[in-house]
Image (cartoon, rainbow, N blue to C red; front, side):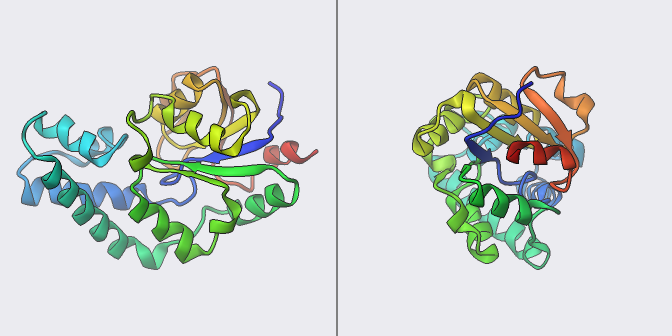
Length: 221
C-alpha cells in the first residue's frame, strides 16, 4: 500500500501511552469489589472499548444505572486509574520523535479517542504535548463509539484532510475497524493485542511494537 499521509490521527490509551493494564485493573476492582460483577481480568479486557457508560451497560444491562450514576462511576474509575498510572506516565518509545518529525514535516495531527476529556487532558498537559494536535475528539464529542467511524470522520473534518489522506494509529481491533469504516488506512501497535487478533483488516499498513520502527520513516520521504 502507498505510504502517504497528510494527517496522523492517534487513538490515545494503548496507542500513545502504554496504560491499558492500569485501566483493566481499575475497572476490575470497581466492577467486582464495589459492583459485584464477578468478572475475570480477561472478561474485563474483552469489554475495553467504547465509552465508559457503554461498558457498564454491556456488563449490567440497559437500565441498571442512571446516566448520573454512570457518570459518577466513570469519573471514579478514571481517578483511580490516574492515581495508579501517573508516576509511569510517558509516551510509548519513539513517539516523541515521531510527533516532532511529523510536526516539522507539516503532517497535521489529531487525537480520536473514546476517553473522556478528563483523561485526555491528563495525558496532554502532564506530558506537555498539546501543541502538536490541531484536533481532539473525545467520548463527549460523538454519539457513536468505535467501531462506528464517527470519531475518525470528525477528527478528519476538524483537520480539514480527506479520510483517504489520514493515517490512524490504533492498538485495538475495534479501533482499526472504525478506521476502516471511515475509509482510512491504519498502523496497528501491538501493546495490548497480537497481530493475530486483528483478523486481517485490509486497512492495516503495518504492525509496530513501538514508534522506533524504521518502517515509519517512509512517511517522511
